[in-house]
Length: 188
Image (cartoon, rainbow, N blue to C red; front, side):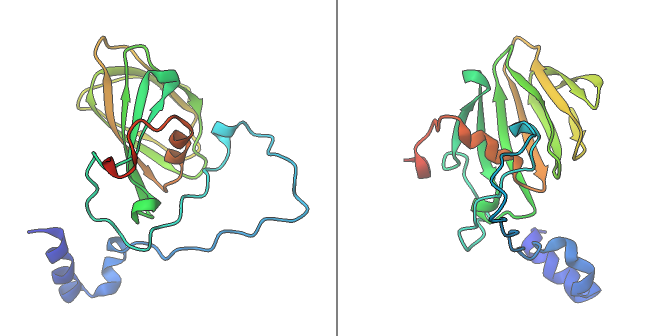
């Protein structure tokens, strides 16, 4: 049964309060910036709280074709990040990115202070360090990185590394937009 039909059925049987997980959270106003605070943060950019997500377009896109999703060059030209779901598509509770890295590509150590990260490895293998623990990950593995955990990765397979990356608490994916946009907006 498709989820759009299942949720109303569950709501009828359980009541809407029991289905709070099925709704997007209410948008919260961004905190006002202090007029007296002009000094830059002492933390490196990778350790700062995630950037404020782009405002929603006003409607939720239930389907985002990968050909239309913005794709950015990352990792010094050794990788790509395709931003599939995020606040700009109306996904305010989480984001999803397709992460691709060539053999030898690296993600330097960094922290997401307020977002957990989940990876599902589709291809390739990498050595990761999460909270000081070294782990080798490969095709079919799932990886959980709690918010606030230092982590890094290096591709060790001869083949490219591909992973679906989800941030519970979107925002960290916006760092990819600092790279060069590889495809034109709207897939054109």
